[in-house]
Length: 159
Image (cartoon, rainbow, N blue to C red):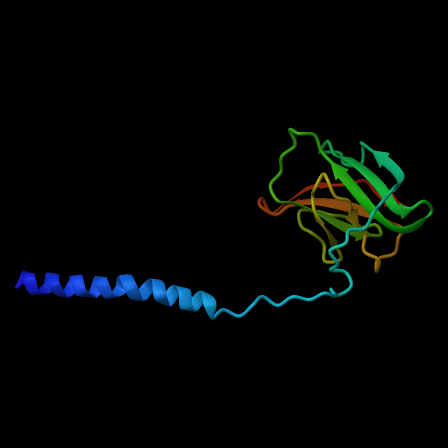
């Protein structure tokens, strides 16, 4: 009784040992190529903007966290604004996002509906302000996505 089952299992594994690698190769060969595009839509370009002109730099913008903020511009006196944020090595907050609120709004424990996401907190890259919002004044919000809490709110910024 056991011997016929063992022989059947031996044949099935021999067939699977040949059929599965062949099916894998055929499946990889039959895949459709990844679509590519030479032209990207506006706002999704792979070319990064260069923010060279520094407007100001402050260490006291955030009261709870030791973050240095610098307002930079594409060119001196013209171009889009961006903010560069840098923190010391010992500052560690998981999944930190930076939001912008135009005008004067009070922030409690949640992100307001009129907040605009500038991007992830990254020491190496400036975060451009949206061109749709008026370049007048507002506040920055640091939000930890992992902790689901507002880490800090900046003092009002004016351009």
